[in-house]
Image 1 (cartoon, rainbow, N blue to C red):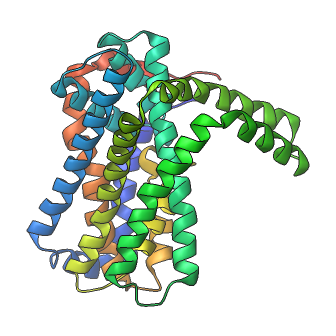
Image 2 (image 1 turned 45 degrees about the vertical axis):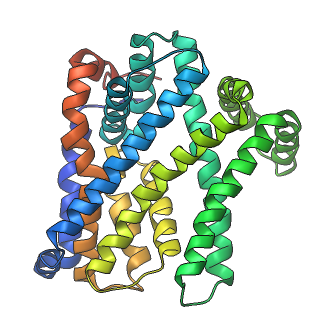
Length: 332
């Protein structure tokens, strides 16, 4: 798959051009209504999420018998976040984190297993989120009061961890059942083999889970969930600052869907598809100018901020040689 460097130079202007095309000058006027402290608060939430990720990485490293300083753990997180934002479908994150963990003392195989474990944690959190949010949005009242939002967040935390623990202990029958289900739905054999290879990579991550105590795994999962809930709550804060109210559950779903669509596109950060899907899903709630202002502020704290902070850290800890390796064309 070819990943020329110019994709990044096209992604950033496009992510700014689309909000302007949607809201025009009205969007810029709305943007001025967002207090500076709201943007600062959004940036602080993202930064706290990075700290949670760094603590999670330290716990994982300790669980596999290695140690890593807080500075190196945070640097690994920031460099990986930058690589994820700067490459199509976030493909650079795996290479960057594996490279840095290997430099910090892990074998290449164990470093890859640590990355796989982090993906498993994210997977279970978002699968739980999809189920819980679907139930809340389909059966909940139109006025999502605070109590329901708290219950929703509690289910995201508790439900995801319960599913993760069950899968770690009983993954063999689950995988066999999944294979039979795919065959019943006439999924092509070639596609089933691809899924099987994907599952095998995750088994290495599962082997780490099985070696962790329950309290360690619980703490690791809670930190992973904390990171995503902080990141996905910044949008709610921005919209409230503009004087509008959209349920937190619905905003969480919008971001999960838009960023998921963005992972399927060729441009880094899902530029273009993220902005379009985001705008379509918010159109029933907000006007064009407000959508444009919200989009610019949201992308700043959840996308551009990753370049501002993560870029220098990536260059300092990973270097230009790894950047060239990530963006080297291949004929896979």
